[in-house]
Image 1 (cartoon, rainbow, N blue to C red):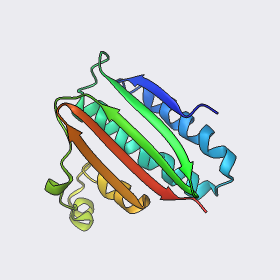
Image 2: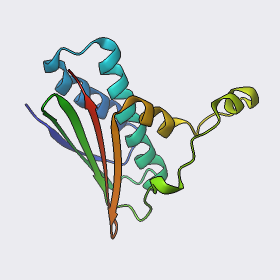
Image 3: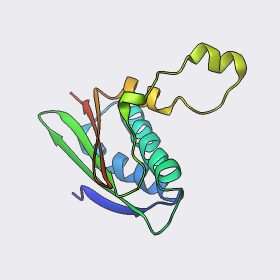
Length: 137
């Protein structure tokens, strides 16, 4: 089973990523809820990297690798964008305030952090790596 793909930083590739993750995880008989949560989390991170880190530049690419080890699903997403995400600067949004004011956006990483068991970001030079982990059994 194919467990790695490379995509250009174009929003149209979000469906490619969702299908890739769904197809890979189909072999593990997850409930629809767990499957859709994982796909949503991956989609959110990839969308952020395409839109914010790489400014939807088709000449830039993301490399994605999937694996399951000891009943833990892992995905590694890499890019070479000049901007990187620094988790230490992340502040959990006030969801009640977002709802009250009708603010759209800004809650994606909060959702990812709630869905996945572990979220890691690292940067070496211009090389960025995001790793997401979720126990699937």
